[in-house]
Length: 520
Image (cartoon, rainbow, N blue to C red; front, side, top):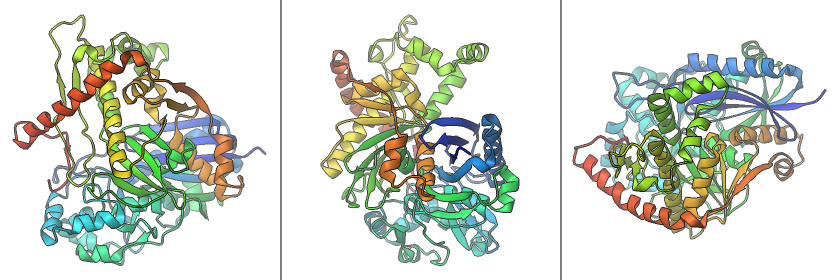
């Protein structure tokens, strides 16, 4: 019987189950969008509904087996991946009792408490863990302690979403270091918990589960997991990792000096380094890679994919309806029109996410600026292309930021995720950064990375290097167009001045931040 590998991927905007052949061919994918709602009692909250979301995950697993016609017995191994930062709390019986998704921002007061408790503590946390309070678990768990004391008292274990998926499949719980390192309570060098940091922050030090390395053959699908999903009981489940770390494996970026850009709900610029040293300015996140003895400098762009969804749903209903009638993707229809708009959008620009500043992280109010009342030039496709260009400008800024911190930048970019399906966006990225952009054949790189780890974990590949060589294939390379270099140079220099001016309006209270880290 031919064997296959399955990845279950819990992203910010959706959950999906993907099946791959051992050669890395994507055989089938079933995806369900999900939403993380704000609790009206707690502004800035982003709750994770573990009951409904597990039902969606189950549906994806059952759905991809049905869609492909692959027998459960043919699934040789499964692994999981997810958005980072989201956490779940469990009681001593192993029941979920509280959870929040990745950019939950309800813990303003707790960040303030931590800064008042010890002004130098955040930098100490960063230098050891690569994390600040902005997305880490420390202030969120403190929030639970302060606002839901009965939940805090019942808490026996903290976990991440990819580990939660494994827990639902197998009944066994552990945390792996690539996602665990995003909590701010894990040491980058030893890849183990820092209970002393938790204690300094006023938290209990007895809620941390075992750490199991990425790629470990951890457990088999339980009887309950099999009943929930249609998988075969006993199917090996291999420890996966955070979405970006597994994404870099899925595009073959497993060595120091390589870099990848992942374009999804959020965009991440990932630069591999063989040193776990952090940025003295605390501007850039540093995470454990899912590969031993490798780390990643990470610069995050907030919400480009969600901005695209907003623009599609709010302004492009015609394209959505036409796509439904013709069986096409509405973004393809939008791209065809946007391609006719000249580079630089006649000088119009927009501001959404800012260059990352991890220790003082905030974004201005969303803004379009410098357009004229000339509909033949400034129509919805001009605004749409401006969003594409804005995101590419931000990637360029992040390349420069990481170069300042490490002294290095890549010779080329690997571009993966949903956004890389757009030839227009891929070309704009090459033009703005001035670097060749390689797009892999499998766009769901994160899921492929999980599948690769699953195969390595059960011995289907002799090594990670062999697995990557066998599975990672390339679709196309986009070369920078020198004819538009001057246009994008001017656009970039303007953006670097426009954005601080927009941010200053937020600082004055005249406009609202698109997002601001807790406590700022």
